[in-house]
Length: 236
Image (cartoon, rainbow, N blue to C red):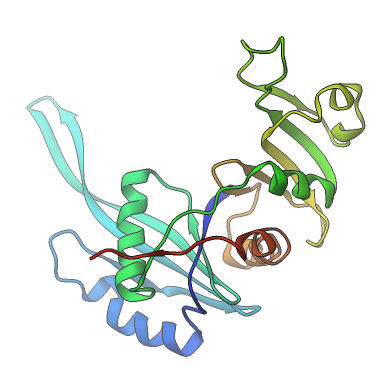
């Protein structure tokens, strides 16, 4: 399973030749800092007009011992995917970790843009459901009168939950999350989408498994919505 957030840039940020040059400059193996960060060149994959690589950074890991607290270096890998024209997928991580990755990408690939995740509003999540091959789960944030004490209403099944009586009754409530089988991806591939803009690909983790799914997500779902998204200029 792999989760990603999607960010938009002002133009195509990278191509195969550019990323190969960047790898030579930004490889983690050439970083002489105490805590290294950079691209692992052996993870580079170019496939279907997309570029994939792993960015990683070292950090001090704190752990208890009999003598007290000790520290050791640990490595955190993050999957990065440049998709088609001007979108970047970043593996889902904590806010603190995301700030490290965003700073690295902004400094080296999109210096003029402040990268911000694209959230999914109710209209986008309904588009996901309407265009899915099958729907396995829907979670609502109900707002109707009489449900003031209900924060979330979720129904899940083996498929076809949009044909259930519970969906007939509550399907018009705002959607917080859904899990679907994307129509445009060959074979069954379950993907979840939530309001915050996180896309989770179930039982897929390798680059060549992830790339076609995220490309469909960007081209068919996010791109039409993100055309009107406002890009934020970076403040130095």
